[in-house]
Image 1 (tube, helix red, strand yellow):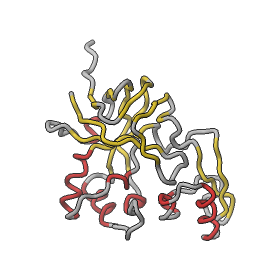
Image 2 (tube, one colour):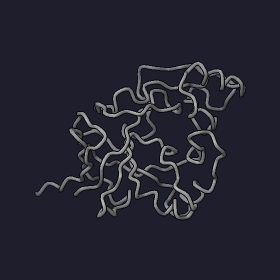
Image 3 (cartoon, one colour):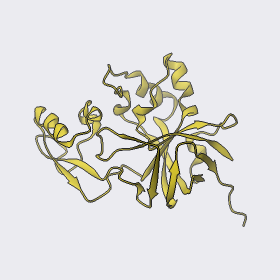
Length: 213
């Protein structure tokens, strides 16, 4: 079953900081190559000592791509952080994916087209005309995107970070309020990698037929 066509690819080299737009990428067993391979970890001045310093602790981190600028921004708030590398810093799964159709009701409710970049997916997909499944209806499904095969692990439960504008304009708390009231706070899906490979903008995202027993 055709779900849609890949419109955009993003990776986020440092968790919670700005992303990079890609035309194509290699997807490894651990996720998109170079994605979330670093994170700022709190050393002091904040309750999350020893844990990652995230976007919802600082509503401007997503506007920064330079780690030194991010460390300085944290220090300006009285929080000491340091860069950690050598691991993957995911929340729940290595790949995140968003289909534009899931935004339709939110767009209608708010009266404008909500910027999909707020949700920071690795893959943003334009839905095929016939596609109508929700995130929860895809849980457990196997997907193919270019050479890559994925399994849907779960819907993504969203936090206050989605209210922050991707270009730094005023936040919109109505976004999270609507998601909490109407969508179980879900938007997008987490996936695990079954088969690594390459994918590029323009590739089709397909739901594979289940194996016959």
